Length: 266
Image (cartoon, rainbow, N blue to C red; front, side, top):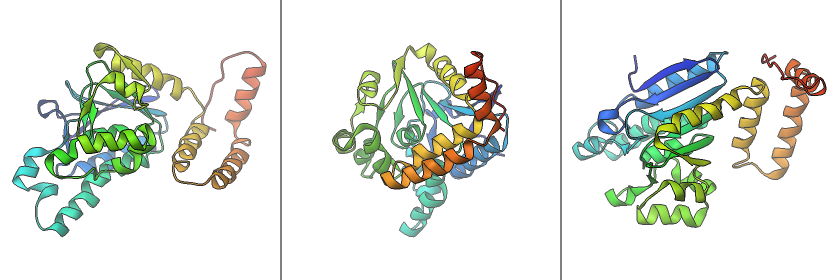
């Protein structure tokens, strides 16, 4: 049974907490990829859950890869180059892939440092809310590595190519105000308000019709790499199906009757 992630459920919202607070929530230990894959699959299978809040225990979101394991060349970082490559593809990449392919919307409550792999994990969320004391950055070059966990693909799409290059080439850490200015985060809030703010956002998201919500997330994800014409065709296909859902009729009827809709995912 995995012990990396703690999951708490509050109605239609699940709170998924990276739970290694004594070590600032490092990632990349053996089995971490399986833990993320297992938890995300369980949450997708739970029809009561409509949105997930991802955060870190203690004073960090995630300080990144396991430096001790890197120094010892153990776990995912041990063995021949071929074995290290396998450690990435079958473990570390499984962490970010589980989040990238996750059907449910994810709001990251970035409660502290989100660095290296931790920054990549935060990038996989759909919405990021950051605390005043949080920092984000990609200091891979400082330890002779590259952003090898998806950040090289996604970060330029979030903050722009020039800023992503600056982050990677300098290895600097950036504050919460910069996170908002650069579009890394939607908003900055007080340290003691970050989880509540994320839950408030998740509540608004979870109130939407589940099928349309998943379809909207998938469309935004596909829009990262599809052409305009491909997205228009996908939009028409998805829209045609959603027009035949009960939630669509409920939404239209509620609007006309000037009442709050009750969406059932049907």
